[in-house]
Length: 355
Image 1 (cartoon, one colour):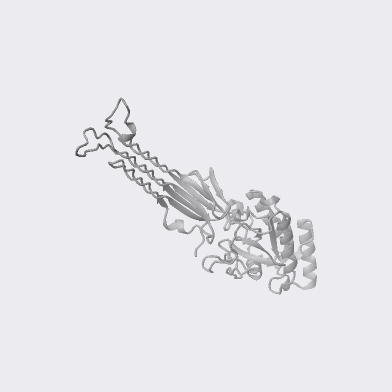
Image 2 (cartoon, helix red, strand yellow):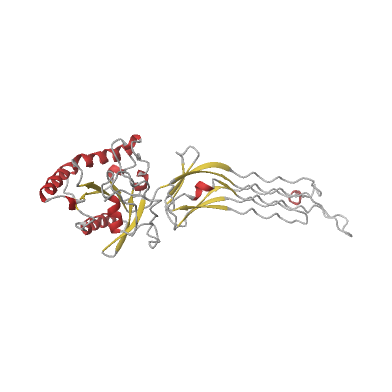
């Protein structure tokens, strides 16, 4: 399954059916009078957040959605049928924007949340509706009202409790693969991660969702490398886990580079609670480890966790630290209800950096 987090679609609700002009023509009824029925109402266009989706890939293959028009009214006071509605199924966490891609229409953050994007046109009145004591035989009816049409943008921001950030090859995918059942692509070259990944971690009987995004490099906010377009997927998280690879020659600079990009992006990321960890410590000797841990502590202002996903060292401690921040923020568990899917994507679709 490929990953797509933004899509542009055209929607149109159904037109209302026209009212009918009809008169009774029955034997032995001298003054039949009007019997034209009303037109049916046009269908609406709705959007609904559903479980089991974590990409907008379906909207790559279908960009036009039109609801059914209402049926015209008929004689014998028969009202036309209403048009069928159209519902866009989107992942939880999808935002809907106007055509300018800036004006927010609705933010779907809970499973089952629905919103009407376009209202169908009302059906027209048949000539029976206009009968009165002074007009016994009206010979006109209303046309149905037109439906609404617009172009909208869908933008997905994954809902997760904790987000992983860091430079490429900081060990984010190895961390994700170790503590969850997600299976991102792991390789020893930069930008192995091309798409965000989600996984569900469990510690001491409590679950929380981790979101991993492609690595950031200096100038990402200006589009350098993959850029910062995926940072929106960690905007909703309650805490960030900032991984700095022990392989980096200058771990303090690596930390400040990512912090600068988070600040330049905005979205409140720089103000989120942060846990810093020096990863891949299994490749360092004791002297190097102490030196780099001290340098990273000076850069971030507090003592970092020392972890190795390969050996498991320090992993439990950092997971508990993440859990504590999430619980204290009032988010014991994420809003996503079904943990069994684990949100894992295939290697072709979700590729991640080296551990």
